[in-house]
Image 1 (cartoon, rainbow over the protein chains, first blue to last red):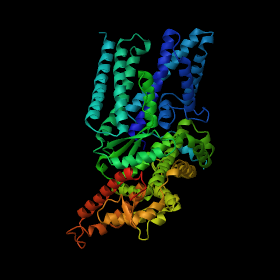
Image 2: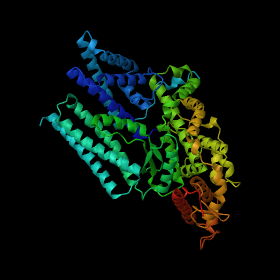
Image 3: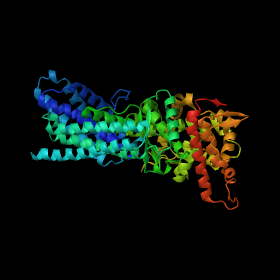
Image 4: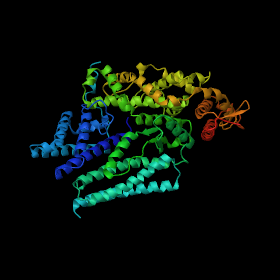
Amino acid sequence: MLSDTEARIRYLIVGFFAQRVLDALVRCAETGDAPEFDTTMKTAIRELQAATGTQPEDRRDIRAFSNYEQIRTLDEVRSQVQVRNMIRVLTGLLERRNAKDPASVQRGLDEAIDFFSQLESQALRNFDQPVESLPSGLRELCTAS
Amino acid sequence: MHSELAGLMQDAASLHRFVRFLREFCEERRATHHYLSSSRAFFLYVQQLAEKTETFLQRLISSPEPTYRSPRAERKVAALKRFWTVLHWLIKPAADAHTLRVPVPLLGLLERHLRSLGGFSESKVVTLLSPDLNYFQYRTGPLRELAAQVTLMLDAPPFPEGLGFIAIPYSQESRLFTNLLLYHELGHFAFETEGNAAGLLPQVDDALTAVLGEQFASAPEPLRSWCRGRLVAWCEETYADLFATFLIGPAYSFASIELFNLLALLEAPRSLRFDSEHTADAYRFNEQLNYLKNAGWWQCLGGAKTEHQKLIEKLAARKEEEYLYPVPDIPQLGSLLIRAFLRVRVPVRELVAKTCKECAADTRPFVAYSEAIWRYLANATVPSTLSLGGEAFHPPEVATINSAFLFSLASLSRLLAKVEGYDASRPKVSDYGQVAGRIELWTMKAIEDLALLSRRPKVG
């Protein structure tokens, strides 16, 4: 079993990652922009892509979703389909300056703030009460062999 | 004060007190105890981070910044509290491990070994004294990543470069032989530092696809990541074992037997069982023995086998088909994952060989000096300077450790026979224990001497 301390550290990394993204989103929602907004969103997109298996082969710079405990934390908050939707929302926010409908930018920000707030809370909950659980679908893995 | 701010103030003040205590604790320990430079670097980092945290908490209360307002500010305090809880876990065991409580000569040898490997010249290892009866290494990658996130938030100094954490059970603080297991923990540190987990992923994915088929290739990411996690963890364990065996030779396998015996891990079916993070002990000894035979070590150990050698051979001889990894309700999955894992062990062996080949323990000094070392120990003499054919020689540390360990396992009676009042017909456990402890002390002293003397290969 992964040591309790290591599992907790992994959850907490997700918590801090979510906070960093939230800081940029909140500031943008209140002031119309935020320093390093684009960089933060690009990082968030890469991390979420890694968590849904759509990121390129090299995973060396993946930090927040580099292992099962972290990906499970995300899975506890939103389904894989919803995470893919969030990737689209964040990609849309990168294009906010060209957006024809400012209200859609605000909706995107609100949606993303809600997403990362829930992720942050779940990560801190898992830190407080780490549980070892198996992913669903393990049984089906054995059917091919 | 507004009630929201009052709540935040209470939270921030509570964290402030906690952090200040830890800062003062580190200051006090650094001033009153002697530590290795790695521990001093860690304490200094904690102190600097504490100062930055205290400043940040004040800013959180007084800044008009939108991201510093409640409830965002409260969430930041909540995350910081947890981060400091993590440091709290490390600080006390690190503070307990001052130089009077740890095997300094062995740790010196360990660090010299580490620095002699390519890419580890700046590495330092903080020793922790743990209440657990086991050795372990804190993966610094996640800790470093966590610290990096905190650094961004607090504008604090970065986590010290090349710092690792290794824990020793407090009951083993003065031992030499069981503490050779630290080499395994050093192997974990090397595996992580080299980024081998990410490097092995293509082979791990190929092995899983080969065994589980398309079901794995098309599985959702949480499932794939769980399977990968098992194989990578087992690869890392294999790497750490082989790393230790490369650097310190059979003494590492003997040390493993000592500890596993104490923990009653060596009886089947326990010795055949993998768990989610560790390989089965039978598999571990199979890998070690395989290397020791290929490197010529096993053949050098002499004709009459010790109980440790017999046990290693017995465990290593278990068939791969007997290995188990019980996954609740899915009995066949464990054996499939083990089958996939066994396909990746060759790349792991190659990685260890690449890292350690320049520093692999050499059998030749062992062959040349072991008889003399035994003679010195049998006469209760520290074997750091050996007189051979009228000339004085300093045996290398690894040859000294292996010779002394083997002496302790095979020939303790030679020394006991010289103890005044010892009656061989009525052996006493306490006598054996005491004399075995002495062998470790003399060997530790030899390592300390050799750290100085080995700069000159020959004296006289």
